[in-house]
Image (tube, rainbow, N blue to C red):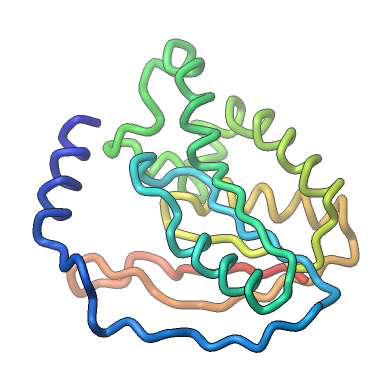
Length: 183
């Protein structure tokens, strides 16, 4: 974790404090009958908050939608400290990223993570949002797959739209990435 923090600090030194390429977002504010929840599931670097979904949520709130974010990555990270002894390893160690991917997740982490995610699934069901968006990386594809399947059962009228992109490792595509939006 310390090495990851050092890398982040070095990157931060190189970052441009005022990006002149950013543009203003002009919004006509209306009262809209819709609510949106953006969700970040594990595993992602716990020291990197989900700026992307916070920004999207802010823009939607300004446009008159009710919008919020659930950083379940940091919630799971805090909870995972209880699992280290049982698992025999730290699931948030960068060397264990593949354990969160579809296929590996079910074999390695699902037994300890899914009961924790089930509590959050119930909270989402109680809120019953009209739109639900998930940030998806290869290293959280297992939990996203699990949560989406559970929500489809609990909210049978939910619509899932998948927008596909690709993650590259060097020049090879290592897996498709899906941004899931549930309506």
